[in-house]
Length: 265
Image (tube, rainbow, N blue to C red; front, side, top):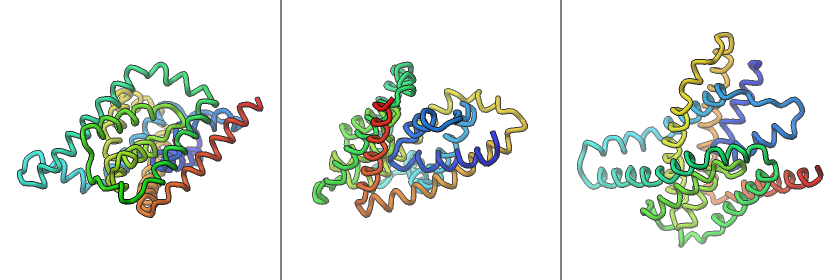
């Protein structure tokens, strides 16, 4: 893998991991439609995911610090933060169950371009419905137990290529009445244990990177980190301005085009 390829892949990963367009779906489309396209390998993919994990940690460092501090302090704010931790744990449980029990089935879907097209249309629909929520209905500043479990299930199903993890979890949060920025915050905090768990399952793979590819891979990871931070800031701005329809339209176009190409053979 060349340095340019690594950086381009890092940029794509950083953008599509957080913007509601499905990074896995775009990877499947690229594999099927771009001549000579090859996946970069599990080792590099894991490294890129760790880079985007670091982006989330850096971006929400103040929130994470407050959550950790609440574990050994008292007061109303600490109680509020401990409740957030509990909701994150409750949401992570269904995500883990779905991921571990359905892993083999989900892997088979990565060969199905038609599935990606359909799931992108579902992502578009969820974003459009969330966008249509009246502002007066988006009043919750935090999640309930039911909200957390439903969002966790949604995150688990986002393993399916074409379903955007960020888009689907934020959309479900808003459809449940959670204020957009609070829904986004919960979604990205929830991604930390999910990405961390996936990375731990494949921790041995990193040591297998050839010595002559270490610098190249690190440059790709740095590109993913920087673009990931930019994508997070951009998405939060879009959410606050209630312009998710931009991504709904994008997923609609890409999903429809993918299905048409599939039908055309």
